[in-house]
Length: 114
Length: 115
Image 1 (cartoon, rainbow over the protein chains, first blue to last red):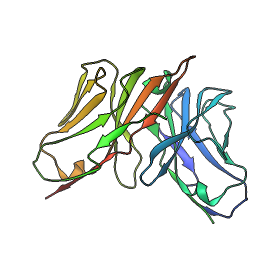
Image 2 (tube, each protein chain N blue to C red):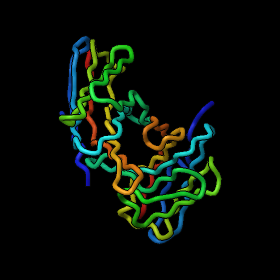
Image 3 (cartoon, rainbow over the protein chains, first blue to last red):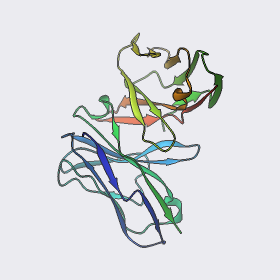
């Protein structure tokens, strides 16, 4: 089944404790992206990747890192999480023309930082 | 920061009603517009990708139009059903000077269809 998977789905952590949210897609998509969803703000792009080893900042990259060593995986790293990073996070991918192609979203990761 | 606005913010309609809502975006540097349907506790799913001025797309009872010159897109739902209840998001894609492109989501229109 074609899909985008994210893990974990739910995570409660403490300030400063490094964490990684994994994202994987099995559709051979070139473009992958991370978003955060906060009430009243809509989906905001954190980072995106046009292909392996090519990443770029979105609108709200501060406090996050990403890597794209393989085409299928695009992990989101929070080196030192803070309470303002409490949010719902979505990973998404699309075929190859960047955001011209429709995006396929993962199931979301709800992160709480205390 | 690009301004992508959706209206209304929320909408309650009765089953069988037809409804429509709006996505407004900057008319310059247009590249594409996406519509997504987002049901509670699920992930957003693509409805339409629109790229040309005057585009009209249809999927079942849902259709969309695009006016890039004036910077808006309409989403129409004919004969609303309870299963249409969801948040409808638009995403505006623009070209950046120097290459690359940028995707900006609106905050969505939350539709509730009541029996």
